[in-house]
Picture 1 (cartoon, rainbow, N blue to C red):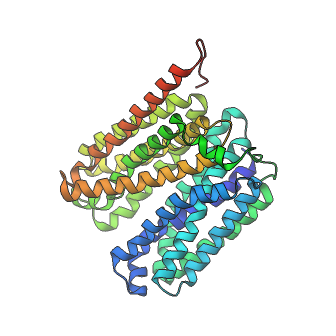
Picture 2: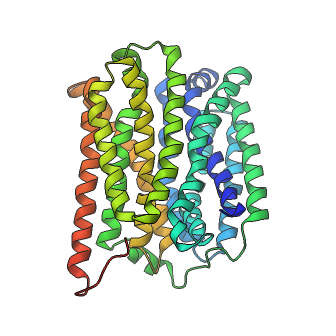
Picture 3: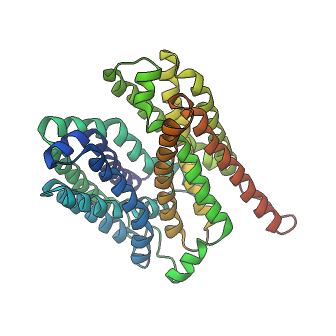
Amino acid sequence: MPLALYALTAGAFGIGVTEFVIMGLLLQVGGDLGVSIPAAGLLISGYALGVVVGAPLMTVATARWPRKTVLLALMGIFTLGNLACALAPGYAALLAARVFTAFAHGTFFGVGSVVATTLVAPKQRASAIAIMFTGLTVANILGVPFGTWLGQACGWRATFWAVAAVGIVALAVIALLVPREAAPVEAGDWRRDLGVLTRAPVLLGFLTTVLGFGGMFAVFTYIAPILTTLSGFSDAAVSPILLVFGGGLVIGNLVGGRLADRRLFATLIGSLLALAATLLLMTLAIHTRVAAVIFVGLLGATAFATVPPLQMWVLDKAQGAGQSLASSFNIGAFNLGNAGGAWLGGVVIAHGPGLGALPWVGALLPLAAVAIALRVRQLEGASAPAGAGRAD
């Protein structure tokens, strides 16, 4: 793989750290700024909202820019946003800085996915996307634990200073390594690009992403109480177990990309079914310590095995026009899945069958995603000319 691809990975690493590290610093932030923990939690929700809103806005605004220029501008926003977080005088300023930073997230991964596919041979496109997203998985294994430790030891502002430094490094390597001719600007206008998003296969592709990832977050959002309440682990054991989850993320992401290069649709369906099966079996596994640890790793592997085929599938549905916009919207769909899965899990705990039912309830979402993907396949088959074949 070309070095330029790993420059995109560096940017993905920084974005992954800034998105998730705040979860481990809510107590410090809330105490320092004098706000409640639920209010501090809005720093997470605000970031997710910034991703969903910022992805289409930033992609449309930069649609006619050279793709390398777009990536550099986004890393500039990311770096400035984290500097603003580090210097925020109060809660409102910190929340605004988080939302501002999130505006870079969706478009970076969306445009970055398109650029990544142009840096490699056609048969390696999904693997290229997987390598870029490896930055996100490594952020969860190394960056987030280190950032949490740094914030607890030196104050939460030190973490944002460190993440800003990562942004400067990513900005430098993208400027140095990504070729200016990567992913030429798409011809046409933004109205036509938006029209691409109204195609039934593209819309259903977004819904497939929301449901597929929502199933994982219905469980993972509440993994700490699951491990301590149902599996019998101590609070101190949760962090080491999450390293197993992070290892699963890396493995699943790379394997999913490799398989998607060979058979995209088969990998999409297979990875979603594997995620559903993992969640269903996890209903039983969480009551035994060893099995619980194994299935935490499997959850990470099967969940992120869906990422390259889901992203590549939407890119294929938008083939010909508006790929950057469709790709960025799909990043927003991942974040909607995160938020929706967390909300569903909360409903199940508060009003439904309870904490132990989260895995099997979560399994219903990737199964629904499989049904939608098969429906898209059926629609495409019905509209294809007689005798036409499919590449995947």
